[in-house]
Length: 343
Figure 1 (cartoon, rainbow, N blue to C red):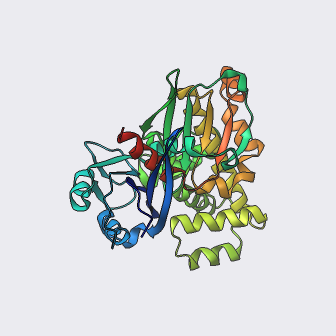
Figure 2: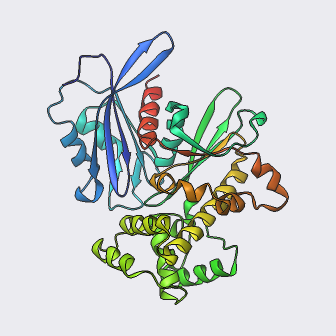
């Protein structure tokens, strides 16, 4: 049982692979209201039939009232309801409010939660990929996050503060930039029909690129990679981890080529999003995949693809690019959203 405080917030980062739930108290001081993390717990998403089941376990034995809650969810939120993109769940804010007696419950897109969470982070929570031109001022920002899927969000500067807007840009059409990527598009079109950027820039995407290189006879993976993938039952996120590991070791040419294609496509789409948002205030890469593959993202492959926008090339090179290193950013953003909703 946490120490007695007058106000509490429940927050969650809900993903296709894992859910992180946390309880915060609110500390009041001269500089305003601040979040104090009391406890947090991680749950495997697929092991539960719905979010409410997880919340029952998390809140078991808690007797104090929670004033507000917010959950970052993967998918478009409509009328306080969402059907998750990568899980057979539907989440209703009103159902959560009624079952757990929480006066204010909000659902926001998971990338919107990431965007809100940026303001909660320290300088040490970022890895700079491109310094950019800081003379451009505050400006708009954007977040792109490859994980189980591909999330995107914009953050516009209204002259006083940054405001977040969510989107489903990860489901926009994939645009190949080379003969190899055209062949990849044709390969994936035969499987899926519509090919979005999420089919390539995600854990699932790493698996798709690897399968393309192998099944079309372009390259053969090392026997050890094939063995480890079989052991992992070729689960999307696990397969991505195997490919990344052997690419970094340099012991499997297929894995190396897979990650180079992945990073190039990530750079190109990050650049597309940055152009549409006019992200002179910064481009932020979220999710576990950029953290694990920071060395690849720092390479010329990513930066060339990001800046390769014709007459806009000099503008792209002026935009700061950072990897978010704190894996609780979306959780902090959801909590911040709940806190501000109480005002």
